[in-house]
Amino acid sequence: MKKFAMLLAALLLMMTVFAACGESKDAASGASQPGGAASSSEAAGEESAQPADTGDGDNTLVMATNAFFEPYEYYEGDDIVGIDAEVGKAIADKLGMDFEISDVDFDAIIPNVQSGKASMGMAGMTVTEDRQKNVNFTRSYATAVQVVIVPEGSDIAAIDDMAGKKIGVQQGTTGDIYCSAPVEEDGFGEENVTRYNKGTDAVMALLSGKVDCVVIDNEPAKAFVAANEGLKILDTAYAEEEYAICIAKDNEELLEKVDTALGELIDDGTVQKIVDKYITAE
Ligand code: GLN
Image 1: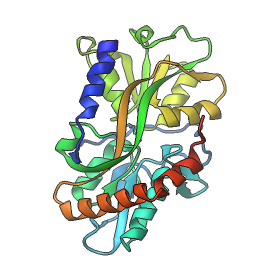
Image 2: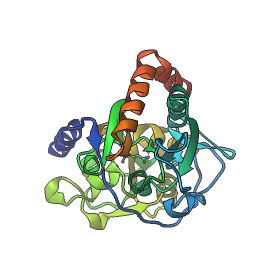
Image 3: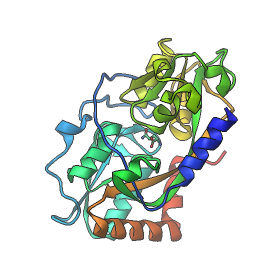
Image 4: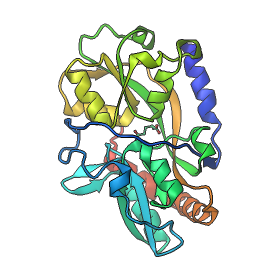
């Protein structure tokens, strides 16, 4: 499994300013979100996206996200809040643009960006080589690791123990990609992986015993564990990742603008201030 981790790390290190991938799909919903409120509904890319603009037409910066990923994006009542929501708004402000969030399935984000339904995708999205084939990425604004959530008392104590177990993931995420890889490629085999539309749904499946563990990014994992009794995060984390904003390949002008604005917000401490509001240092 060390080989697995190293391979992933190497893979993920290869991020520059360009990226992507595509596809789409749907599924069920329903679960206990960490933040509270709102179940799915406006999700599912197809319905939710407005004719949108790409940032170069009218003056609205439309951010596609999947708002079940606390503390990066989640519902507070009817509002979508979180680190990405605030940094996205700060970027729009800097660019003198209006700001709108479009909540879609995670794996509909890149297609929404590619088709111009959204100006950019910002969703705790990891820069990967595959995604870079379909969209461009800005500089990174956060790092993350993939972690494993198990029920307290689980016999899974380390990543190697996951072999042959039922693994829950969020469809189309890096956790899905790593775990679904064949065993020879240091994954756990597609047949052992169940994909859910939202991390929330994967955690519900864990709570009801449908899966034995859930692989997801560390910060949402903490939020899920805090919001649901009887769960814990394994000490072993793996696959270090970088989050960035994705923008359509054919919109280099917007990429440049958003990347510059993001850089300024990182340099002047705004991004850190927003992060500190949502993530308390351990
Ligand atoms: N960081 C993971 C990915 O990019 C998960 C993101 C998410 O679920 N919002 O695949």
